[in-house]
Image (cartoon, rainbow, N blue to C red):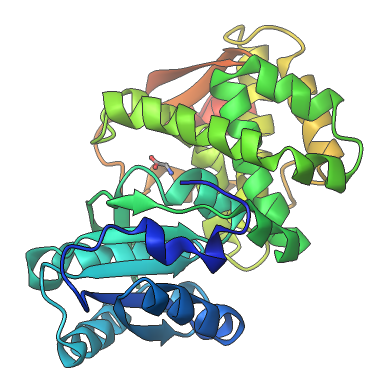
Length: 346
Ligand code: GLY
């Protein structure tokens, strides 16, 4: 469900199967302070019994230790499989809350209420839930779909600009891989942020629709779903090299989309001019597009040794043109050319 202002009345949208049914709300301390009372009121008015469980804001909370803390809290609240968990927050809260919901008592139905643009258009949909290990992000998790996703576009009005742009990079990605009209609308319309925000329902709806269509065909990420990783091979590498401190996920993906398209265009795998359209749109939305000053060997090592992609082959996502993405399987060492423009020395 998407509706402006739904935050104040979402309780009544959640199907209730018995009176005083419990909903444990997983959120972070910052969001609890701002929205805690409103959330509790909306759920209680709809007849639910609620408790807010909050964790520290930030990626560090996406851990097995925090999950263990939440299991204890859920036991204390007396949650069972007929009850619900609601994850209210950005990607960290959604992934952590979903992971806890998928494992506690072998699975509690859960609801995603994403509060950032990135979570609204990407992580709240598609069922990927996970926590991090010290060796890497998202190394423990499962595919566990929410029963319901609630989106309030008004929440974006107070979202920090940096995080708004973070999500816009994923919106641009959807246009680049699947929807030429969306891409060029973003490039040529919306002169101000107010213009963009006024159309946000349509934009979010389109992005969710593209993700839904792709995930329905390839839930387990063995084929078409990999398209969603356009810009992510180089992007994840950049994030890791800078230890997740210098660039947000969206900023790193923005650089990744432009860099790989620049290379694939030179290799004759992408129509000429495509990288330039990506450069223009990233400049318009004040996202970075150029490879930062970094140790390229370290970047290549990080990409080639990605713990989630083992084996001789790896996949890159390329564009034929704007709106048409495709997945290409390449030998692991060939990534060198896609990152540096030069073949690996043998
Ligand atoms: N965020 C990429 C995916 O859900 O597959």
